[in-house]
Length: 124
Image 1 (cartoon, rainbow, N blue to C red):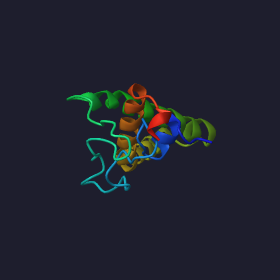
Image 2: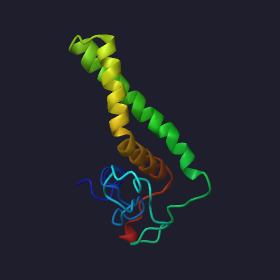
Image 3: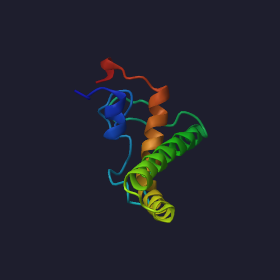
Image 4: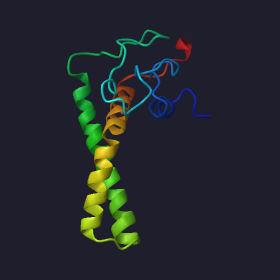
């Protein structure tokens, strides 16, 4: 159902052009030596993952948006619904941001490249 969509590419770390090739070298987000390493091009369709120098700087804005969404959602859950203190929310949010940093960085890069690369059915 999700196959061949941008959401599939983002969730399963696949090439945005063909949804077959892997976007990252290592599947583990928490291998801190290689968590953002990606090949220069897709091994299946040949789509270049290196668009231009500094291309992925724009992913910082996506990462910011994801972190704001995480913070707002966590605030609503902890402070408004569960009546936690503001300090408990801040500590929980800080820990979550630190723990989720590698995963969030990878997802923001995938979201960003999916904005600019269209799926091509002929590349499957």
